[in-house]
Amino acid sequence: CRTLSEAVVDFSLCTIDIFRRHMNIDLTAMSDYVRGHRSCGVASLAICRVAQGDLSMYMSARVYPWDYAAASIILHEMQGAYCMLDRPSSLTKVTAPDQVTFLAAENIRLIEDLKLLMDKKLLGLDQVN
Image 1 (cartoon, helix red, strand yellow):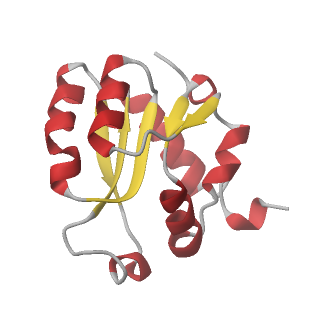
Image 2: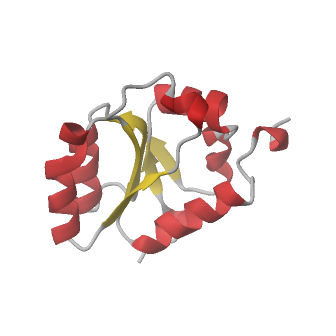
């Protein structure tokens, strides 16, 4: 079971921008809390890489069900975890109605740890110099 400090996470520049503008979360500040970052650019591939153990976590600010549905089944079968994050109204106004903010991880602990960082605003823009 990897901890957040050992995690290699996958998210895109678009997700960084959306989290910054609409959720007041600076994902670049995650560099203080994780081992590394990657971006493979394809949700289903990234989720399968989490299931395989190549990545610890994947996050996207806006994916469609067809982007994550099949890969989520594979992740679940490999004892991984995933969830949809709450979205502020400002984000739902600029995305399609069936898009979600999605988080996949090799275990539920990583999801809980990341949510804790977000809830405590440790990744908030007010923390960035």
